[in-house]
Length: 53
Image (cartoon, rainbow, N blue to C red; front, side, top):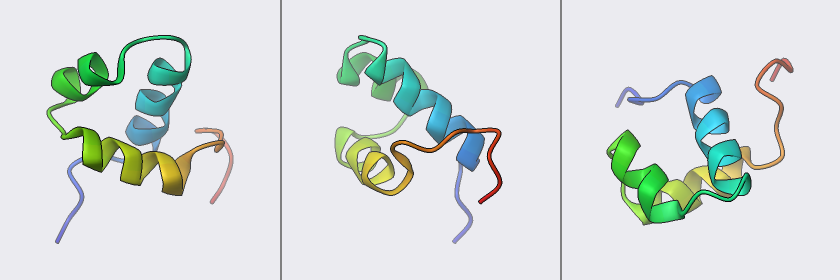
């Protein structure tokens, strides 16, 4: 199954939430559930979008 969002998009979305935006608002705008957001955050949290994986 192909992911809908790129790693860069996921990391940018996490940074939006860490900057103080409500998780529900970020999820609604990107069309994902909060469970998916927290799954992404556990996997990609703390990563820099410009850093090689």
